[in-house]
Length: 293
Image (cartoon, rainbow, N blue to C red; front, side, top):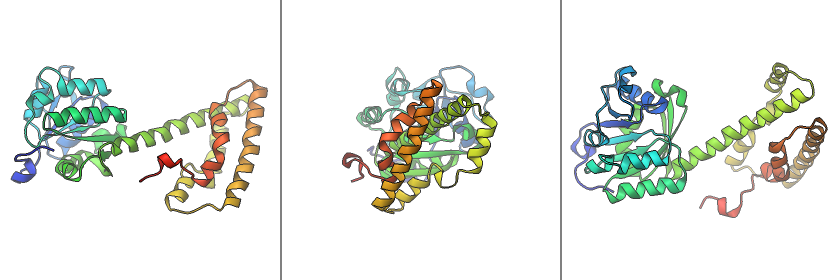
């Protein structure tokens, strides 16, 4: 944690910086400007800020972003780019100052979060992992920010986060924001893949996609994707006989899907992966290593 006078200590509003002016970073800069918190911005591509409403001309170096900011929001593609932003020539850490917070909006692996946080700590800079969702609404103050880091650092950064976000969720210690983002991504991509597999099965049987959409939209009911999560999150224990009955039904139904897929010459990897685990799906059972402490 940094020492010295911070914006919060002095009673001044924290200054914001944005690095990376793509869909996320550019939208964040526009949203900050809309709220009157004009950010210092940088992108490797010259002139990108010219098309962003209310956003000033970008500064020529990352060091200038650090000098002009108390909270720098980094929205780059991956961990390699984030590392270069921090440690490259005239990078953010070259102009580190007391109270500086770097918040990483990019999605990276947890080990990379820890590595980047360590680089910041060595320079006396605080670090937050702050994955975002709702990217298409970034320029309309529509992002949800999933933050991991110490309470005091989150609170120092919160005025800036609040100014561009729809919602800020402090998930816990360093890394928990990214873990939440990874969990959400796993659900999103898996559901998309499962929907594609459903469409493949339907079309193989001569059913049109509009008709499939009509049926699944009208008959979702208790099969909605979040139903079981809602049950388990509420601490409700599903009786063993109900789990056994539901698993028996799932095994029958998914076996029928596999048999049809084999006859139609199509692959159903989502069904193949899900079928052996349906008992755990219904019971909410987690491996001991995955249970919260």
